[in-house]
Length: 81
Image 1 (tube, helix red, strand yellow):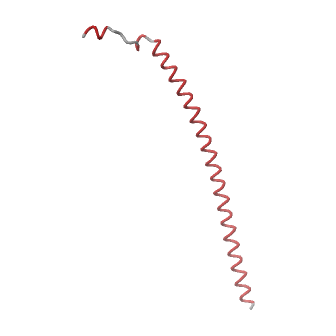
Image 2: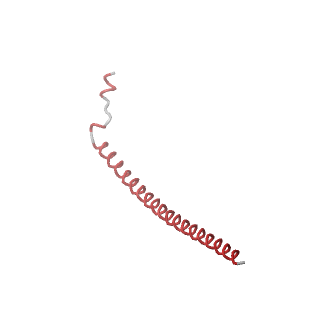
Image 3: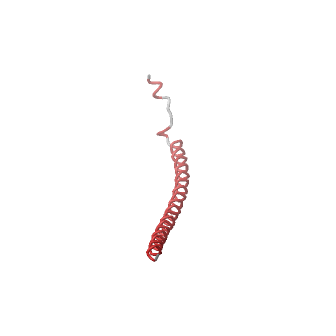
């Protein structure tokens, strides 16, 4: 009878240890997911910022090109042909 109690206690101990291990693993995975989610949000924000900067730079380059005579089309080449 006492041997059965010891076996039962051992099984309960092993089961509790396994539950504790699984709970800790779940908590660790939750923290990892939170970290990844925050990183994704930061990357999205940075991406939007860079897109905006690219638009500004693109417009700036277009303005420079339109103001420069180097990029203006001329009819002199077509007249030579």
